[in-house]
Image 1: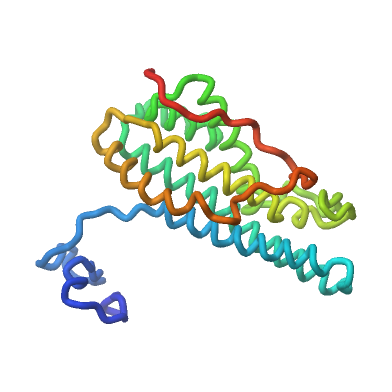
Image 2 (image 1 turned 180 degrees about the horizontal axis):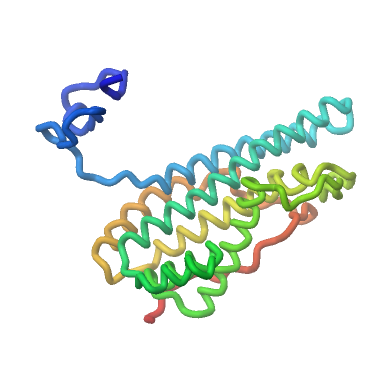
Length: 262
């Protein structure tokens, strides 16, 4: 295997911005015009989160519409459908936040001593991320607390999606159905996925909406990300649920995040 390239044909104009990676050869880039723009994966994961959330919304509708008339096999099928779409939406939200914070951290100065301290003490990810965001966006203490609480809840669900070993197989009450089900069907359903995807998008959108970072490279990143978020916030799957539907756990009230001088 000598070359890795896109098998699709491209026009002459497109070819100028396509980077073909050659394996096992000189690492220097081939001569020619190559785009220097960095690919930001955060919007991609947000789009995937919303796409899977839309699937979870459809699955929830199918569950509601067929539950009373379906047999046990069909009931398990719709629960599994909603679970699979919801767990993907939640996981994509966590990855989007990881990508966002990694991009932000790369554009600001975080003392090496602090990073070493985090590693030594095994500081939780949500604590590290809230400190990075505080430094980057000059957050006031009350907003740091709000951001940290939201991050903790988002990553609690994301971690359960990746490593559910802490959970037992005991059946728990499904908040909407009022019957005992496997814990995964109660935790990973549309209602909770909607909360997490909405909280993720809101947190990122509010940070980039009003921020005026001092670092020029971070300002450039924020401006580009802000434009890509506009089309995501009106997705129908993000709309709130009726008041009689309760999640496993609600997110803390998050005040609008506005920057304040450090």
